[in-house]
Amino acid sequence: MSDFFQGNFPLKTVSVTKSAPRSPEAETEVSGSLAITIAEAASDRKAGDILVLRVADVSYLADYFVMMTGYSKVQVRAIADAIEAQVESEWQRRPLRTEGKAEGSWVLQDYGEVIVHIMMPKEREFYNLEAFWINAERISLPNSDEGGGKPTL
Image (cartoon, rainbow, N blue to C red; front, top):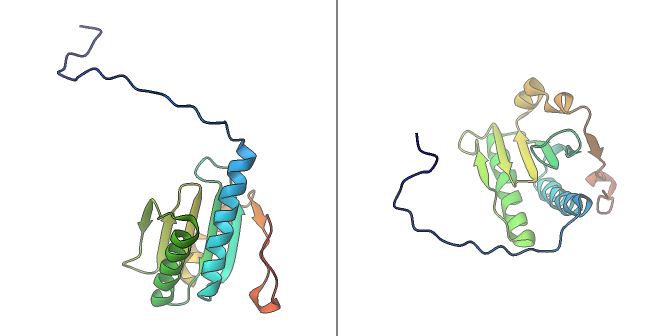
């Protein structure tokens, strides 16, 4: 067997540009701000029980999970639309992938470093993701009823 691949592929050189290295803390701070933007957009659409979890230390999947409850399929979709619009407006980003929007009982939005779960109450209770990620740091959000300011990381 030969040690090389025979093919009709042209040889190209690849230029490598190096940027200043970013510390993991700086990247987590940026993703934390994105997670807060998502939580605020969900709150504007009256999402219930919004939870921001910093999972960077316990998972390689993402830096943050943002979980919330929508009380009807229409509200779940509206929350998802509001999050997409707010993130696109403030961050010029669209989700890498969105799943479950057609069904409306559980919508997952993947922004890379932040993963969003918008669930109906039965799905949230059944899957109980909060218990699965029990070792993740919980980021406190002010209760909108109390008129608190912006959440802090």
